Length: 84
Image (cartoon, rainbow, N blue to C red; front, side, top):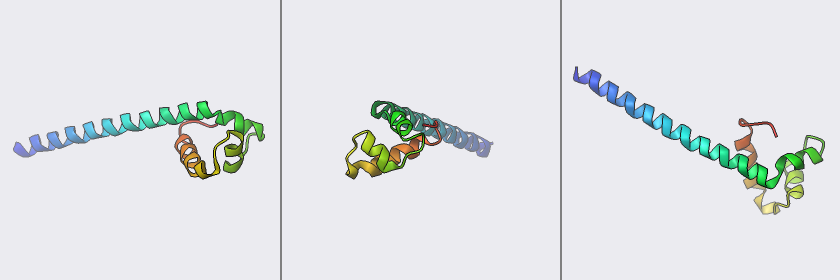
């Protein structure tokens, strides 16, 4: 019986951890989308005919070349969320 209780407690902890991670990643995705809107990334991509390289996007939205790795991370975060 104690083994079943421990197993149930373990499952409750795993469920809570899963919910915490899901909430955290939802926040990250929403902030990434907000950043994309603020930077007008969709407009920058559209300006290049719907397909643009990262340096082209960075130049269009006036991101300093040293920040291109950050822009790359932002775009990778947005990839499963939506199509820009």
